[in-house]
Image (tube, rainbow, N blue to C red; front, side):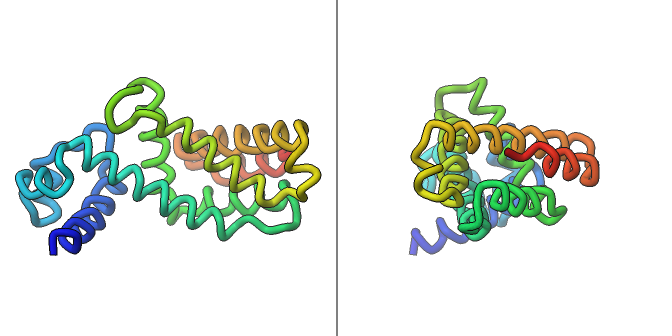
Length: 179
């Protein structure tokens, strides 16, 4: 029963942080918004850090599931273009905004629930992109460099898109500079 309630509250909390952000989330307003109490959240997640870790894990799981569906066997450039289509879609802005917020926080707060989030994200995305490369390319040093360049381009363009909302310009830049 507690596991069902934990899952239900995690789903509601995830929807809340997608809309309101995660870096400065406060238990009292979050609990009120999702029909719970800070005490119940602390019981189910052990601490505020435990709740944040669970929310970050949930975001990562959703992001990877969505990205994994985009990795065609047609090559890195094709996979990167499909990934950009997903990243730049207006309906995905909340998860990309949440990712950017958690990524940045992880870079400046290497302890607590944020620890390792940015590095894990890089590793996750490189693995997704590797799945689109033929084995000979994937396993070569140049293959890793191409994935890294594609990831840097996608990540930078996503940050730019979040800041400006200029889909046409960022999409044109991504398509022009993909490895």
